[in-house]
Image (cartoon, rainbow, N blue to C red; front, side, top):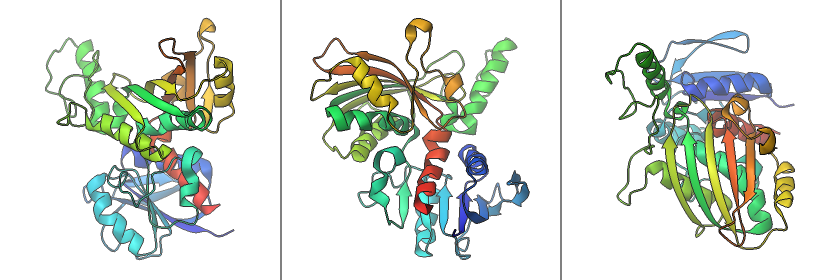
Length: 337
């Protein structure tokens, strides 16, 4: 079997470190690993695959060694500069930032949904937004069978999605509460304390009143499902949970479905989904179960009584794994098989 060279760009960040963990679990046919980060993080020692790696500074010459694939998790500006450089040197890039997601010439991929779009493809592949990924894994089989007419997203997103500063804000908010300290001097990421609070504010606000996160979910869902005119609205909320995003998804169909059990069976048979749906026995998706898992957990599956043909879903997934690192590595895994 052919062996490949793989680079991890942004290796010291939350997603980068998780990617290394997932790679240790997968044991893919990789002969050489290259770990890159910014000048500030260069020199960091990371233990990986029973070896100690020294993280190198990313520069224009980083891809001169014949690297086959690179997973970028270092932010949009870094991706815009260095992804084209890597591609010009024969490297296929899987990018976790938002830099290329809505570029019409660049595929936006969730392996369970639309991997066929990148068969025999070389270049930049965009990894969708974390909240979009877990949604479309569920939406794809439903759209194939019943044709989705409209979607209403309401998300409850963990602080890990805001990076290490978001995690610090929750940790320090808890400490301040325990110590009886009401100051907000500790805030690094959010405009208000996230502990004991919910913030309907993820990314920046746009002139139309939506946030950029909400617009990402709307536009990325349309692109991935190949339905540019699909009616979608979204409200995204940051909640005081360390990891795993939860979503309430209301779906209206073009055609009628037989009964709700038919929908449950369809989801059970679909790739990447674990159905947890016995509410009378208190069984439904929760973050504790999704944490550290690559599947998307779906429950509270029920008919929407307010429309002729519609359902409600409760969807939970690990936003750092399936929502970023694992999705990228699943793309890589399929490319090298």
